Image (cartoon, rainbow over the protein chains, first blue to last red):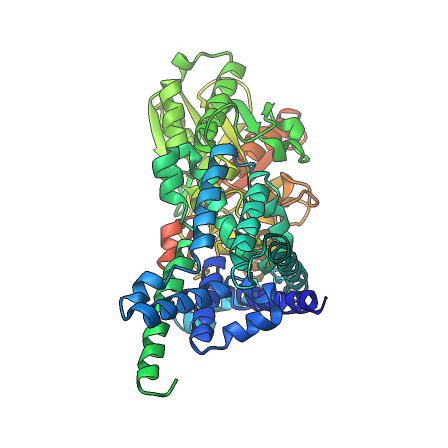
Length: 117
Length: 159
Length: 334
């Protein structure tokens, strides 16, 4: 039960940061999500994002910031096992499921749906 | 950042902008933050629930359960986008739907669905990443830079 | 005849012998629904793309106006039309269907009055016996081109406006009965350095104010001359700014006669309309439908419509350019 509470609070808080970037700094959604991804990557590199995921579960892994963390983790993991080229081969390893699913299902959506306007 | 922009304006332009701003409805920042907090938190709770489901019934490890969880959230988003419902939820929730992976999936699904009229190759294929491109490009590039920096500091024995 | 710096006075008083307004589902739910000749239930009009649907809107508006004048397409001498799409495709392709000698226009949302001014110029100077003017916009097509895909979940701010899906057409001739185009003031491009594409009203208000002031200065006229003075699509935000700015400059337009097509076309409580309607079809359908109908009934006798257009493109915005605007004013009298 506690896991759910922290998922709610941390997930909500990250979204509030996003909302402040959108409304306060008047950034576009693309700028806002890019900023959060880069932040996630930096925190991931500093080793601070994984503890957040351990603590808040989906509250930290569902927001787009975890994408940045996963990219860094993938790159470093592959570097550790195969050396420098691992940075390139490993970067998409962890995020592959998400990106592939998005492409596949978005394409299927285009096959089935028409825009409603 | 806005002051830098203002310096390039003539005095008349600056005066007008202040005149206009005083007569504009302001974005309800506080209300938007509260709505974003609730919807964003709720989506993460749903994600946590889905993750627990996969761990319990499909025997995924905690780490690996993240993958099917994200996939399920993406499928749900594509369905809501296709049924014309997601944009209405998003108008209310703002960052609450944009920031979770639902936002990412929605950018791809909405672009793909809209550009179907230009054909599947150039329309759907060529435009799918129109809005999600920045996230992927900046995510990968920043991850690359961060990785290089981390490797460098590890080599120096600092990390 | 030229009067003042930038105003044309049409001595022969070209007549609008017929006009038509076509709209979509949101316009059907608005307060001006009865002034539309044709209203559609969805954005598609039976076509397989939004852009093709907009072409159909123009065709329908033009064909309806020509029919109402008891004329045939072959009798129309010139067609002047424009819209918001890249390369004004809906207008060009509708012109292909109509087969009338064609002049494409671009003035963003000021196209309808730009067209009406030029059409009246051609007729008044005896370079045409009749000219058909048309202007259209399509909500989904313009969102797709200028902003985001239609199903994209972004959060629009309260200053945003809703692009009208529709087309308005008017047939201007050197004979016949109907409201007459008496003057037109061509506007200057004004840029106050605003950059927010979700706040067109504030960007366009200065252009409207500049053209309005030029109109009254060139003609040495007082605002009370008119029964209605309507801006094109400043919306609730831009209209208020324009009114206050005019007062500040010493030109007081009585509130009872000063209105805006973007405010009239939708009810305040309609979902997603925020500050009001926008798009070429906003001024076009409201003027060629609602206002001309009222004039034909004798309810109002002299109107001034100042259509406003924001001259940005998605690329200019991405290149950090601000939003220049233009406004053209046309007076129509019984």
